[in-house]
Length: 369
Image (cartoon, rainbow, N blue to C red; front, side, top):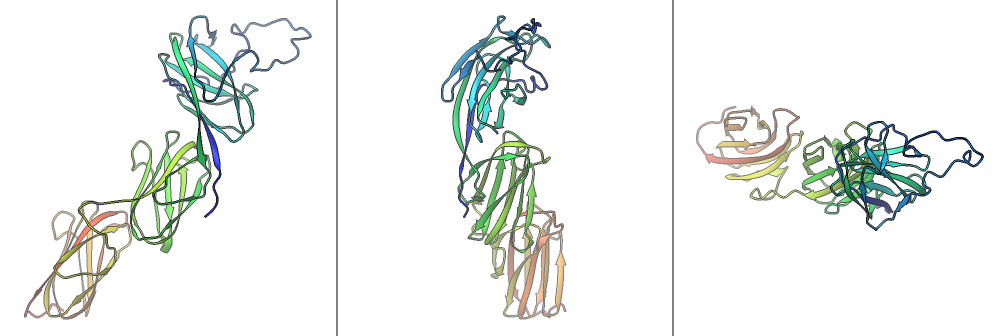
């Protein structure tokens, strides 16, 4: 397993409603943006963070937007600027709380806009001073607000373990994470993010491949499937390939109360039933018939269109919907011998839980060959 190293996520909580207010906007060096006469001293550029109040990690900063706050000449809104020292490879998150209906933006020390939203998260490329701007959403937005800050640890691990979620950072490009499944079973894999539309791809043994966009709701990804033992690759990315931000990746055993143990292969027991999980590939079971019998095999699923096939001893039969709805049913007289039962979906696009039952009734009626 590869070693993981923590990445600092710096959280500056500040809560507001509007997003994107400062996009493409330069911060005025004076509130009136009035020209001044060039003097010898004026020719020396002032530090953008000079004379600004400072935000300190771990400490609250309260403020208020009033009519005396600096004026944005473009739309009449008011704003307050702060200086903040941030470390290389940290991830800063900025949001607002309080009565102010506001927006927050992050600039570097050259006043280049890095990000803006109601919640801003940005990876810091260089250590130094940055400018945080809190603004009303329009010319009528005034009121108090609070800026909070804290540090959260992220990981750059390239592995995930069942039962141990990881929080990490996506910077545009997809990330590959390794997963080892030691015991066959049903698992639920989730990728969640508040910053971008999560998209999860999984590849594994014997050509296994699944992907998902929004099955977990709220633009989060979820894959529930039966996984065989082996090594899998989870590819975490955004749905459109250009997202960045914090995400959580988790792999958990998926318990299905009332269904008992899932079986995706093996021998079928006469006059009994089992539950299995279909994920696009036919599942094969063995059936031993000891005496001539009328054999009834039923496959039911509320997740996909069930399809049954039986072969062996010169017999080859199949069924789609004879059990009603989209459930499958086979009734066939068989001679003693070994048979193969294939359980699958009518379409390879389906997946989900199914129940398979087998009943054998000895009979003297000649088999249908």
